[in-house]
Image (cartoon, rainbow, N blue to C red; front, top):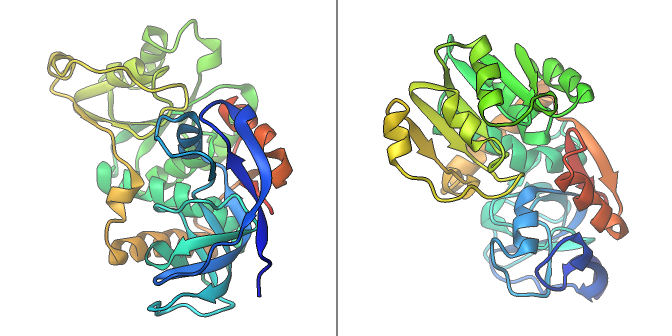
Length: 332
C-alpha cells in the first residue's frame, strides 16, 4: 500500500517560480474511474507555467503538473482495462503529477507499450500528441508544402519538425542559439534561422523566412507567441494558416481580423490538445501512433534535463529561460 503522504511540488499562490514549494501532501483516495500511480517521471510544460502564473486560474494551493508516466498502485471502482502493476501515461487534462504518487483519471490515461521506457513515455505523451494533432489534424501538412516551425530545438518543436518531414514537407526552422541549430538540423529542418542574430523578431524574421520561401510558407506552427506572432503572419502565403499553439514569450494581444484579410485571406487558429483527444478512441489513436513511432525508432524524443522535485524552481527557470533543448522531466 502507498504511504499516507507523498512529496509534491505545490503552487502556494499565483506568481513566478519562486512560489513553488515541495511539501508532504496526503495521498488522495482512489475514487470511481480513477487510478493511483507511482510516478516514474513527470513532464515540465508551459501549460504548467500558465497555471502557476494564474493565466489559467486554479485555486491555490495546488499540486502542479499535468503529464506523467508511472506504475499503477491501485484501481478505482468501475475502471476496466487497467490493473495494478501496469505502466501508464497521461497528459490530457491531468493534474497534480509533480509528485511521488498521483491520482489520474482512467479515461484520460493510456497504456505504455513494452519497448517504450516510462521516462520516454512521460517525455512524449503531451508534446508528442501535440505535435501529432498539429501536423496531422489542425493543418495536415502535405508533401511539397513548406512549414515554418518556431523554437524547433524545443521539445515540441523538434517533434513537429520530424513529423513534417515524415509527411514530405520542407521545413524552415527558427532557433535562438548556435547550439540549437544542430538540434533543429538533426530533427530534419531544411533551413534554420537564428533569431538571436536578427535585429528583431518581426520584420527581420519575416524577411529571413521569405529569403528561403519568397511566396511565403503554407503553415506556421508557432508555440512562442507574442515575440514571433507578427513574423508568423508575415511569413504566410495567400490563404496560409498560422497555428498558434502556445505563448512561451507571452500571450498575443487581441488581433484585428482585418489583418487576415489584408495579408491574403489568411487563417488563424489557437488549438489545444484537449479538443484533439476529445474521445477515448482519438486519445488511444494519437498516443498509440506516437508510442509506436518511438518504439520503431521513427520518432526521436530528446530528454534535455532531469530534475528532483526539490529543484522545481530551477527546472521552470530553465524552461522559461528557453535555454534548454528537448524535454525536461521531474524524476521523483
